[in-house]
Image 1 (cartoon, rainbow, N blue to C red):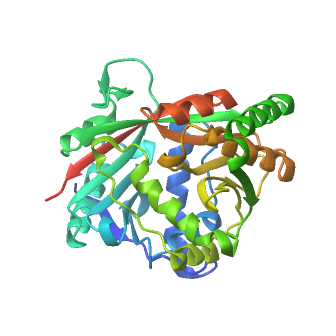
Image 2: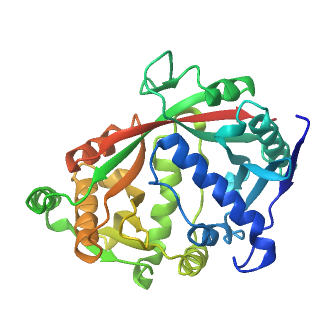
Length: 358
């Protein structure tokens, strides 16, 4: 498209330096797009909260592009990469300010991201695109679970670029606080079902040394055990070195993690964990991050045990947040059932799209 200038953003070490201006402006585009499309400020985040995630380049390489019209940054594009067995895949994302949509900016940025990914040796692209519209003609996921609008701008663009819909994810919100008596009942029922063979451990920003290797094993299994349909999400290996580097970077973020893990007492190994990420401001929404129970330990209500225990920890240590937001594949019926029992309600659906670049 003529008149569009696309450049790469240098990731700054700090935000109080002149070369951080493009990064800050790009985060401004991200926030404006999220607020406009969702109608809420749930996912509006300051640049200082997001910068630590961009400094993990040794283990999670990422590239950021911005598109300018008449000198103004109006679009942000992201390419995320992984190493090892995941080195053939790129996760792409494009955000365009609403007032310039329909002018080819998103397409130009997406095509540049694809070329960049090919240059990096990636042969497959995955895109997660939220769809806020309800009703109208729908495009069903081949999994048989969920659908997205067939005639929105993002759907038409992805189809025209050669992407195919593989999966639909549900975004759900839990209003806080949860009734304490109800939460106690759910936690008690889950504890009784788990029995004495399972024990819950709670911690915050730093993983206790004795659990680091087990947490790495669980984080790696997150990439292979969760339903991914035809996306064929590759294994994303975590090591203790990567975990410690991740925790060092996140220590610079104003957000606070809350972790619940469950130990299989007979083996002394962790069977699952869940993590909540709370922003510094109490009026903002909490993110539900990873949750996993290893396949070999399912059937003991450990998912409910973990989530209820961590929710109780959050309410005890950081009361006052308005809600928790989480995303799950529509075919992940077990985890959705746990969320629904806790009181989560759907608020958005997200299409997961795949394209073979080469």
